[in-house]
Amino acid sequence: MNDNNVILADSVSYLPHIAAFDLLVKKRFSELELDRLLVYLIDTVDESALPFLADQFDVLGYKGYGLATTTAEKRSVIKRAIELHRYKGTLWAVRESLKNIGYPDAVFTEHVSGHWAKFKVSIDIGGNPVSVASIAELVRMINEYKNVRSHLAEIDFQLSLDDSMELGDRSMENPAVIDSDNLSIGGSFMYDGTYSFNGSKNYSQDTDILTLTIF
Image 1 (spheres, rainbow, N blue to C red):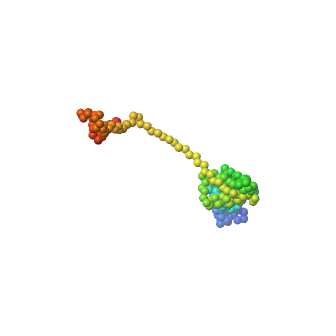
Image 2 (cartoon, rainbow, N blue to C red; image 1 turned 135 degrees about the vertical axis):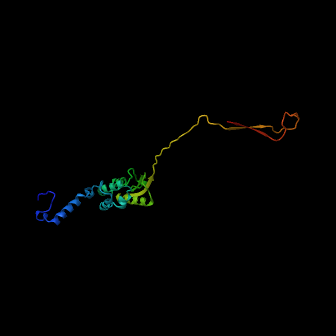
Image 3 (cartoon, rainbow, N blue to C red; image 1 turned 180 degrees about the vertical axis):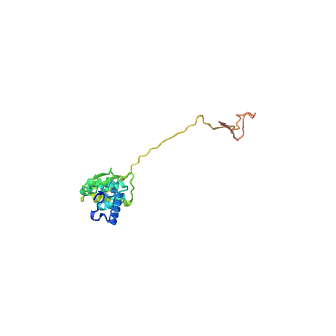
């Protein structure tokens, strides 16, 4: 064989249909994306393969994969699967399982209600969606990785908000001012001889209003 690219034996390489088949196979293989074949490189494998890998590593559903909300979290669940199964039944496994699905700051409190076997978990939900179904799955996941003697008493969910507010103001130089003053002239007087009817006083019972408008 003179051509190093030909893998056919000399006894068949001269046959046209065999040579054509060889060229077809080589062309097909040369177009393959080898990265897609490396399925155990979890960080780079095609996303469509992730559910099958999760099934293979036994982390489907409440064991982690079903609670992951992003592709990065799903990859993390699969990558940590062997460790989680190895240390299953420890606080570390429970803590790491929560980290994988987006709860890195979960706080564990033991001896709840004075009972040595009861514990609770406090979780800051952050941007994670929470529903009745997801809470039920979360409880199942914690029970999956905790030890048998410990009992989950409660889960506390907390929401931390970080927001900012800007205040603005606007002023006008020398704004127009409109004001009104009322001046009452006249009034009621008693006919007790104090006043003289010489026209200097208004003895009527009505009231006159003088309105001054200032601009």
